[in-house]
Amino acid sequence: MKPSMIDTDTISLFLRRHNKVVEKFQHYFKEHGKINLSILNYYEVLGGLRHKDAHRKLAVFQQIVEKNTILPLNEHSCRIASEIYATLRKQGKTLDDIDILIASIAIENELVLVTHNQKHFSRIENLEIEDWSL
Image (cartoon, rainbow, N blue to C red; front, side):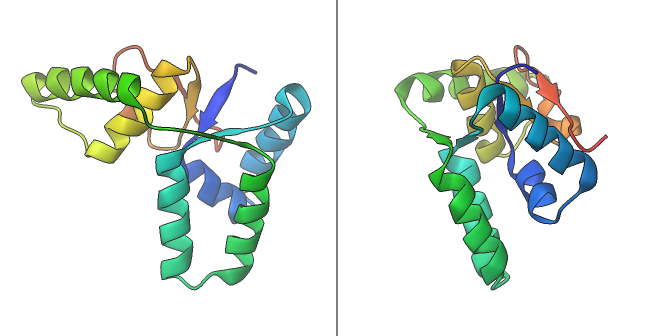
């Protein structure tokens, strides 16, 4: 498996114990030792779990975070994001800013973005994506 960054929807599937996703996580951990999340995915998952008052899943997620890597949003990833935004806007294929920023962090760190949202992320050039739920 290639080094990857896990998107919010895939984390949610893992927390809901989706069999294929759990298997892929286990295989990835064996090969790489840690998973990568962006700071934006961290924010999205925390916000979603707190909104749902999902205390058990929140505790599991916090344990996952403590043992893994959270990648920051920085100046370089923002430059990449601005290029993605401009390109997509010119093509009339806009995406939410948070998705563009997530993609830019994956591109900056040369990571595959693991996401179930292939429809949106496939619009972004130079972004490799995988869906672990299939």
